[in-house]
Length: 199
Image (cartoon, rainbow, N blue to C red; front, side, top):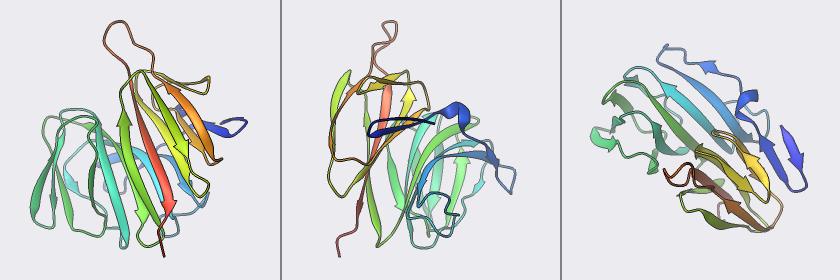
């Protein structure tokens, strides 16, 4: 972890892996709030998961989820009996965490990016930035987490390698740059903006 002024950098290399109880995958928590809260106590939680086999998702009562395919051919989620393809990379898909959800892989293991928020307390928007530059605004009551999902990125001059993250909770305007990588285009950064639910 690196802290520079108002930005806390969370390196992927320092992130422990937690195998699933059913053996179907591995989760790496990127960040959560409150810090150190378990699965029953978080307001928000962001993770990357290696999904190795088909099977049911864990049920999280009172939680809203947004899942984004990062690597692999994709999967089909059956959410409360309705099939939902998640097979377009870097396109967020939102669904309730308390729904009965099963996963079927389309062509082998995948890596997905997962955002969970506690309903009635926190809301989140998930946007994937793929342009070479963008401005990130953090409001006074908000928190923004940026996760580099492809290539590399720079946030106010701080370099983020693939799967590194930057947590920003100081209000202000920040400059995000995604360098072009060998003619293959810019990388991709997930920008997750958290704000308290309006009472």
